[in-house]
Length: 366
Ligand code: V47
Image 1 (tube, rainbow, N blue to C red):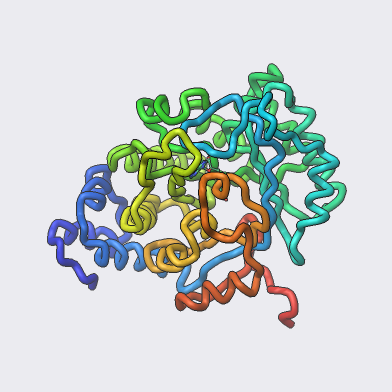
Image 2 (image 1 turned 90 degrees about the vertical axis):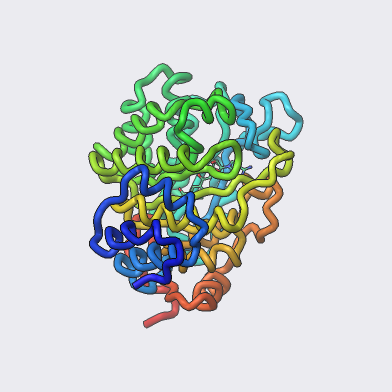
């Protein structure tokens, strides 16, 4: 059924066809194999079983409320110390003004993530969410990674659950997947020692999932990690999903080294990017969507990824800072027409969605 040249993959391919769960060691074997065509074909089989030829995109806008961050993650080019002349904090009014200025036609989502600044307490976050909901009642507010939520809990002297309740009350609609990086504590210690650990990251998602809200999850690859760290990361996500079921989408993120403390590293190869796309589709049998975030992968690799397990590209984005500060060469945003062309050019069917994957009719279509 699949073009397999590495015979070690044969038993795995039988499990893939039968829809059976792959083990940790089978995940490692997938990374050990260089049979990328076989891996891609297996992942594509699962992707088409779940989503046919659809590739989802949305109309969204990214805003980073602050780049002021005490955490100093070694892979990050975006964060600035509070006293740095280039650090900024947008007020809730600034955020609404920016949304008015940059919002693309038909926008259904504003995605907001930022740094960790001890001066910003829970009220700041609730205020900007409220201000955005007042100005754009129909738009979904996807904001705050677990890392930010755990930090707000600490600086505002609240439990994680209490922070989530306040954010939901203000109008938060879902949570993005950032801050996961690599869960293994030895790697985490070397790349982002000041960020919350895996336990708090999962505890935050648990609180949001228990309240019936959705979130995404990510993994940052191409720095110090090796295959067993990536498989461990995926298995932890899969275990959480078995219990709570609130992850909609997994996004493998590729480390961009420019302007970071790891600028001497090459970042992930194109081969690894496609391999991880496929491995994640095969390992994460309980997470419905795999996103090839075009901003970070580049448009061409995001197209190839649509044949290696991915079924989503993210959206218009409009203004992107995190990857562009780290040397991304992609545009900062794409129009709907460009996104649809990119998706059609790789032989997939573009399908407009909202944040929670409800399919929408594109404007102008009767
Ligand atoms: O957590 C930071 C990563 C993430 C770099 O949920 C870097 O739909 C590469 O999570 N090179 C934030 N990566 C972005 C994120 C995200 C993006 C798009 C969609 C969604 C979603 C979530 O960016 C951070 C970190 O893993 N990051 N610096 C860098 N130099």
